[in-house]
Length: 304
Image (cartoon, rainbow, N blue to C red; front, side):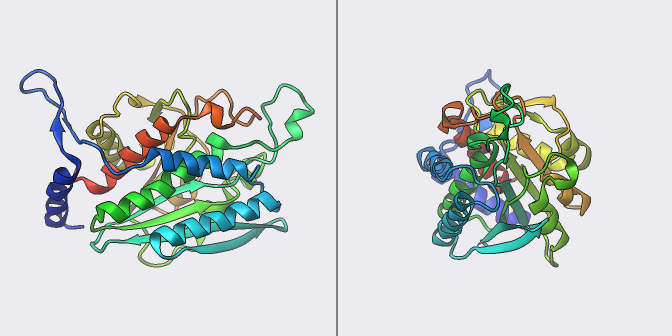
């Protein structure tokens, strides 16, 4: 998107959203925006619907039913969506791809993983470790936010192109060789016209949400991190997107970073229910989904 296109769109969006100034001391007010069209109730419904299928472990019936649901939802919202099938050690997996076409030059990737871990490694009881996790936060939360962002883009109509990628097989294996399988496949098949930058959402539903700057993102995509954190301040969520460096996480952004696409990982890894059977909706919050969704929308639509 050109600077002129962005500036024209910005002023239109300010009128739609009811832009306002923060109430700090004179001369120190922080610009903020009013309500962006992110429906947290619908996003929460998307999280609950995914969990209701059961653990979305590749090769299982709940996984297949959830795949079909996600394809239907994206087709209904954006007009089209396609499966990107691949396999790993004989197990069939499937990325889910869609696009919002608003014109303009900017091409942004929004992504999350939709599979769930086949074993609850962090359960204290060894017998329970063999069970698959519900994956409300680690799996459903990022997807729920992206599904609602797709709706919001149809309202805002920003002059950009947004690719949506829901990755399979992120949580499959016990080691890095069998992790983030879907993003590896996606990165290896990227055609010409690939995204210029992107945002990965992972574990963004925690009730006590607090998101630092993920380590690899800071090292390899600092400008995009700066953009997202500036958007969080603009959206009034600087208390959640904190200005400190977090851990370096092995996640779906790494294959994309290695292909030269600056994709940042928005993740709250300080989550006590990670890879346990307690990763269920009771540990998550609709408000957290809204905070992240509004921040991503601000990053997409404002000249920062």
